[in-house]
Length: 397
Image (cartoon, rainbow, N blue to C red; front, side, top):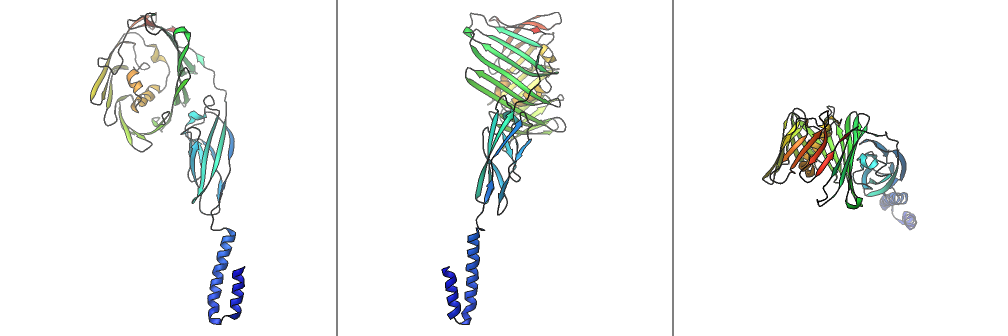
């Protein structure tokens, strides 16, 4: 108001030659006043929270929702700033499309609710959208129990007395899960190990390994996608969270991590089995005679460890189990650094025959000696483990 009064006074008493200067100054004051009063130089961003319900077990990359936002200046960008489970979501920075990053977290049996916070930004101004998702529990196919069960009992003179039971469960024609539990002295519950599979178009797309020991729960989730040649082209693990893009050059396979580094390189044989891999320092290799694993060698920190195998001439019941491409997945799992599988994996689902002896003289691998009793179909009915009285009893349904 004061500036307007001053302008009128100057207009009345100043000579004409100053009139133009006053007019130009006044226009500048007027424009500045209008800009400030209308707030055109201040960025405004708005968005809203989202509550939704969706079915469990979505596919990786499936669209969940699109974050909406408005601004009076510039364009919006979107950033995932918090999530209830790391790696659960993916967000498109340009469109705000929110999609599934790790479908393990969208399994009702693991989590029935899941949340994310997305920042909606224009320039230096941002607002946050909270997304709350409730999962629908779907009725899944009943599992038909059949195949092989086994019981291991240890001699009372051993340090630990336990029964170990394994069950193989089928969904349709394919192995869906196997699980085991361990009973310690006094029959207290010791642990549970299980592997569950999601199968799409005859390919395994989801695995989870779980081990429960008293109140401590360990879960390792694995998700996979495939290229047009039905080869694994992405592998994601949860706890630890790792992501690998997989590229093929004839029989060579490169595992490229989330930092775009080639961490591992593997070589396949003509049956797509991993016969060697390296991380640039250590190497691992195996040899086969037909389907039977004959040897494995691991060079770790310059020290060579090895194991060799001997077999019976009877039938291995485990290679009749329809496990799809599970052996190849476990091959890749070993490549990316899960050394427990390097030590203990003995190719059970591939071998034509049953293992009689594992000779591991230098300590990294686990040596074993087995003796069998067989049924009339040449399948093992009892497997004796070592010389401590342990045995595996096979029953066929």
